[in-house]
Image 1 (cartoon, one colour):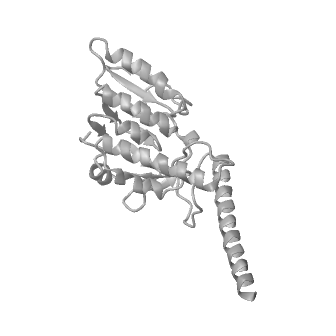
Image 2 (cartoon, rainbow, N blue to C red; image 1 turned 135 degrees about the vertical axis):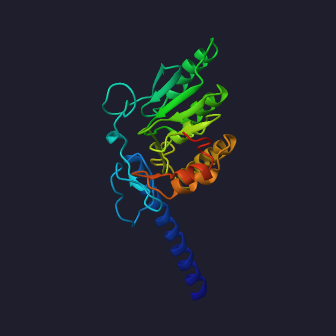
Image 3 (tube, rainbow, N blue to C red; image 1 turned 90 degrees about the vertical axis):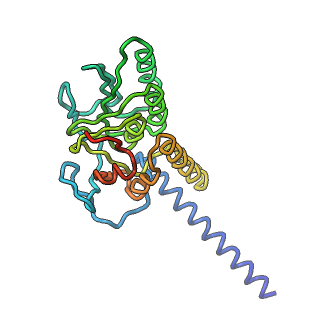
Length: 251
């Protein structure tokens, strides 16, 4: 009888270990929801401030969208909490955080204007990112409209914003513009079983990879984002922007 009893104990230990793992992962996902992001613990040093110079191998910076100023034309101050679309100098200017529902709202204006005479050909971006789903949806509208995406000196395009930039039929960025990626937050995870939450994250990453390929951008661009926690941002060098075909022309 001792052998079956010992086998039963081993099975219970394995099941207990699996349960502890799932509970631990659930806790991480729950904490990620509280912080509006999910990442595994990092042992690396704290990233330096966003405004410090960037060089190859030293590209990770602290990321707090609330600290990023609006450096584009118009009033100075913090970035708008939602995307603001303006038509100026014959082109579009899209500024601010990407909030849920922005894709439908902004798309309606672009589609209406592009069907009129002499529509804008360029859309200038300055955004710290936000909703991934809205970025992908709006990006497809930008591509269907045949717009060229542009970034000027000091403009930023971070987190989900590079998916808007990737949508341009041509993609042009000033060498002083900053484009960065990191891990994304794909909706509510709280109280879901661990395997369900991880499945949702994987599906989201798959959608992004398919989208990048659809836009003619190398999906390996995501490799840097997957290794960078949500509270940090990996700023891409000019060489990387060209290698992944995110930028197609010089400024």
